Image 1 (cartoon, rainbow, N blue to C red):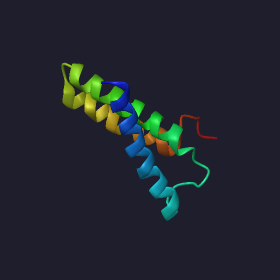
Image 2 (cartoon, rainbow, N blue to C red):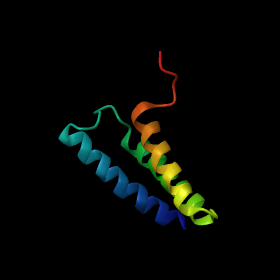
Image 3 (cartoon, one colour):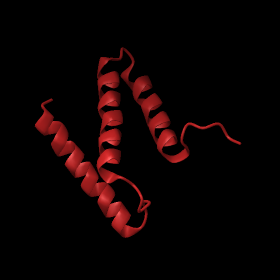
Image 4 (cartoon, one colour):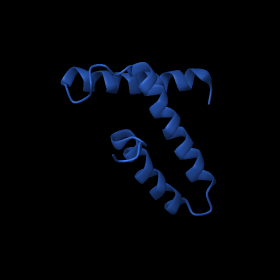
Length: 79
């Protein structure tokens, strides 16, 4: 992918996040540009991993479990 493609993905993801902030279901303090880039990095890595896997269904199920948990719960141990 070219840099322009990555920039376009980031732009559209940022627009989605901005909408969430405006509608009140995402935190207003979110740096939407950086969050968009980070979200896309996870998405692109997941796609690469699934496409290269000998067991793509299993690999996809791992990504579908881990990414939302990281976003919603974080990686910190429960206190």
